[in-house]
Length: 201
Image (cartoon, rainbow, N blue to C red; front, top):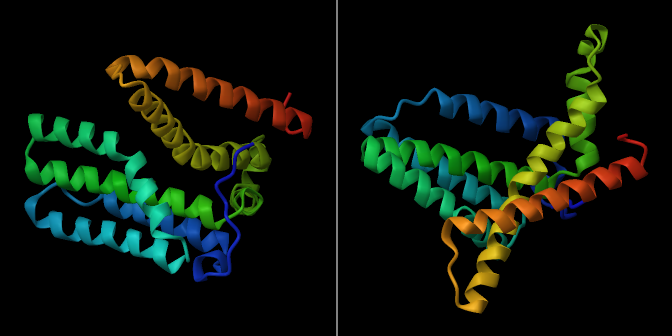
């Protein structure tokens, strides 16, 4: 199973996983409440800049940050262009900024927090739901895998694009097929790894 976690001794590596999850949740809620108006453009851009600075605080290299932005380039272009076409410039900047900030923070979380720590925190949060028949450990596993898969799929996109560039071809939307194949293959590998550990059937 692929994990983006990189051991380190920086401030974010030492911070409790619960605090980092709470920050991600609070930021997601806060950004969702920001109206897509001209007055919100600067605050959202400041949030995006702050998330970038957190990569430096975490002791991660600028290369890691640049790679994270590179993986998001097509998403930024597509979402931004669609909003520019159908809405307006402030809405495009605010909505795209929200998405970028959350995805960068999700990658930062997975790079500074081990999967086991994430699962432990989520399991404790969902513990009271056990009385309702919910398996907190299973839900924690699904959520932690979801967070991990965001940058992993982005890496697949970059690898496919690099392969196309090396062959001098551009397949456009047809690139979705190799991306789907890689993603499904990765899902199978993750399933086999979980089954081998007795975590799935």
